[in-house]
Image (cartoon, rainbow, N blue to C red; front, side, top):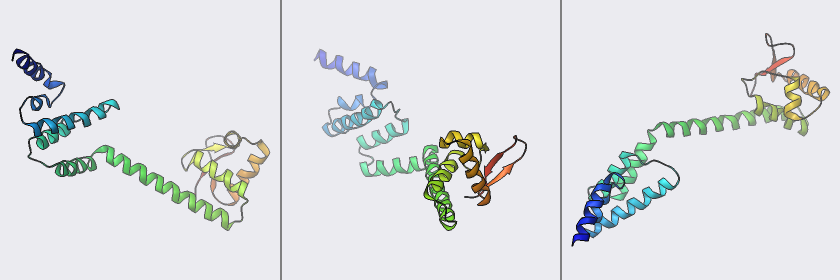
Length: 182
């Protein structure tokens, strides 16, 4: 009996470490089983260095106590995370990727309409991926990105200007350009 009392005291002291400790000693098998299941799930999160929120622990307690089913807990979790910054960032990233795919498709359509060779298409797409619409670049940047010499780089820039894909930019030195379409 002394060992059981000692175990109970140790479990209560470790409540900060294990928020479900009280349920292991409660004498209610269903609650103990649920508590162990939650402890395992949360332990798996900690393996990946993820920190469990107080909100998740409170939902787990609601489930262990029988005030909320696991389905209700799942709904609450989904609802909670759909409103978080992480969810919004994920949506922003997905929208950015979709926009990038649209831009690339528009660029390919334009290049196909102008009967640009496959190699030139590949080079233009590589440059667009590297510089986007914001970065200013020159011939040396094209040489570095595509690993080509200066003459083909100059020819490619002229093609970009002729297709009206880039514009000359002033105030950054001679021969600087920026993508303006797609």
